Length: 168
Figure 1: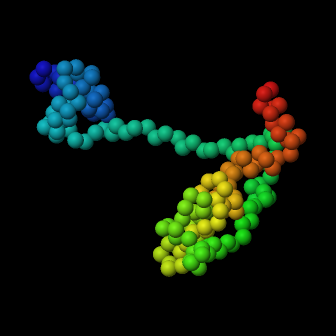
Figure 2: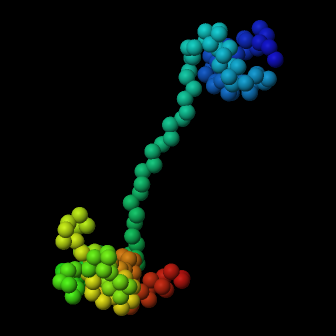
Figure 3: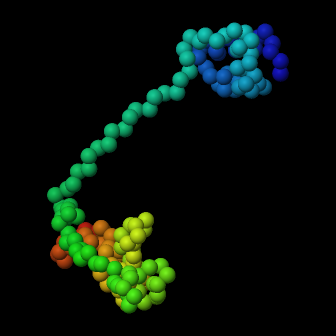
């Protein structure tokens, strides 16, 4: 469809009311948003009575969570027992040297000791019964998650109450 005098008049009126180019294109019918923008620029209708802006959304303020009187209080994670591992020196082999990548085998602890860039870097080398590490390094490497620590540190009565509350 072409731009008749009647459609141009309607375009001017809708543009002055602050409608967007998409809204004007819908009302006029048969033209695209880009066609409306092009005609507006050719007519020199850059100024608007009321600019079309998206409405500002209100900022949502997070409400503090209220903990009811029956909610169980868990001890902070800092009160949980910590695993203390002694500083272990790398095991010396028969030749007097510590275990290296070249001397490790499947039954030796592969826990790295020191900085790999240093000349004295080595691996633990002690016996590894199950897995890649000796018993001490396995305790250090495989620490339980915080949730599991909390579960095991809670009194049995508290765990029972929590299960009952969740089921009810």
